[in-house]
Amino acid sequence: MKGNKKAYWVVILIQAIYAGMFLLSKAAFDHGMNNLIFVFYRQAAATVFLAPLALLFEWKNAPPLPFMTFVKIFLLSFCGITLSLDVNGIGLVYTSATLAAATTNCLPVITFFLALVLRMEVLKLRTTPGIAKLVGIVVCMAGAATLAFYKGPHFEILSHHNQQHHGDHHVSSGKTWIKGCFLLLLSNIFWGLWLVLQAFILKGYPSKLILTTLQCFFSSIQSFAIAIAMERNVNEWKLGWNVRLLAVAYCGIVVTGITFYLQTWVIGKKGPVFLAMSTPLSLIITILSSAILLGEIITLGSLIGGLLLIGGLYSVLWGKSKEHVVVVDTIEKSNEHVIIVNTTDETCQR
Image (cartoon, rainbow, N blue to C red; front, side, top):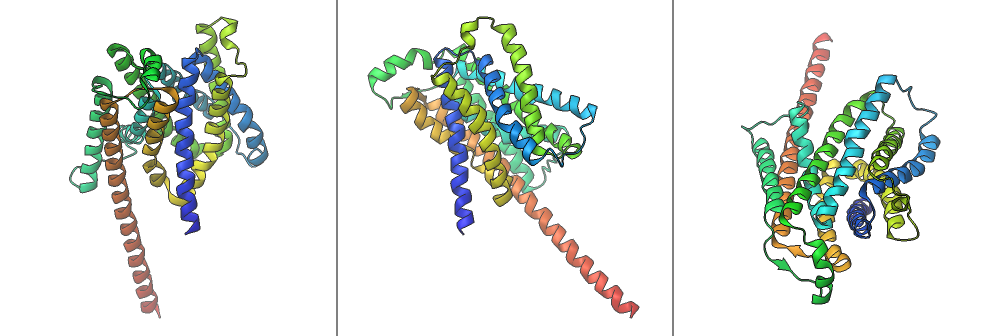
């Protein structure tokens, strides 16, 4: 019982950490930090944090790294991490921390859809779980469309003074908001593709900590090349003792390093579905925190879109869990049948 309670508290902590990531990233961008430079510093901090751990815990027992696997990891890092984070940063500049947190609820659905396209998943439309997964995909798309095209009334949680101070920056124009929403969804597509393709690489190279460190290292090089090509002003690269440094350290060390371990622990205790079902918590925490700390204005469209995304997420997860139960039951029945057959054979032989 204590272990179960601990898993719930750890899952809340994980989602709070992700909410902090959205808030600090947005705060850093609002204070003028270039999002491309931010991604480089974040990945460099993650590499510095993870490298000693990888050398300490996995280096001795790690399998050899073939050249083709090396190339695949490099390309996967570019697609799933560098592009995903760069595009996400631009989308966050155009929109809000709340929208960024809301679109992460699309990730499990997007990942499932990509796995379906790559024939790693099956959608059986004649079964209840199959219909639930299809409904989840459609509802998720409806939620994304609502976030992009409908704002509706504003909910003023803060005082008029704070709304006036933040309003011009946080309420984007229609075109900018739609562009930002599209970029955030595109970022999640890159991330989902990374999750799906990483499964293939893990089969040939199962050292997870070294693989994660390598990807952070490659992403650091790639994001540096992109950032230096787009921004040559030395002053833009300075961090200082401010929110920029805090955001980089937090996202690089706490999010990439500590959360990686916590997620692995939760998956080991309660399974991946339990972790995925906790995703909406980060949206709830982000909505409240961004309104109070950043002065972001909450719109009816954001709330409705977020609820639709959560509904689509749970519909897909419910379908997945039901299919898993059916598979487990089938395997157990098959094993019972094998035991009975073996017992009968032994009796005949005697």
